Image (cartoon, rainbow, N blue to C red; front, side, top):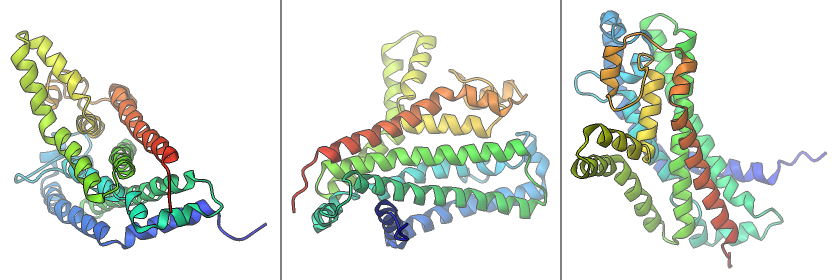
Length: 310
């Protein structure tokens, strides 16, 4: 048996090393740590001084580290939902076209390796980096909470946090795949970056406003307009992620509909077990995973059909 590592493993390790050593990745990690540290420190201080203030809002104290905000600072869940896609886009927008422009892709594919190793290693390497970053950041927050508060989280709290981190990685993987897809379509990295950023900005900022204004303007019936708004809003991956993670980290939410999360939480103070919360957002989970797999399938098919010339 040969002791040499498999070619695919070597290619994945090379991708991981390139990402971790790049200034782009270091700047993104520094930005995430800088933006999240302030809100986390404030929440920890309030929990230690007056835990009843936050535990009254949520049965699970440690979940408040991810969902509560004080002094107009966005909560952790909002910050990671906003900055996470930028990480995926940054890791994927020049994954293929940079290799093509540098002339390295033809040299790599001239080796006796399957062609799909190249695109699969690009996705696998970036995804490993995303998983490591997200789970490290989540465990850092959890560890700081344990050290600062002096108690351990409940088992269901811990599982809910793990599920939140897992679906955050899947959400970032969607934007990673979208970035890789545009890096295959466009030869210039700047064009692919602007295209993906434009789509992210549209769904994050403008899509919700367009849906609300359109339904209110053309549908006089308020109940029908609210139902249609909710249905159209779930086309946005940003809305799916926010709805999914909010339900997972807020056990008091027992229903999704035209009512806001705050209204549902206040009127029905009892909590749902984890299994019921998962059933509540199962359509969101399915849609998010399907979107990620569809983007990967498109990028895979485009790359396998694309001609590679020296």
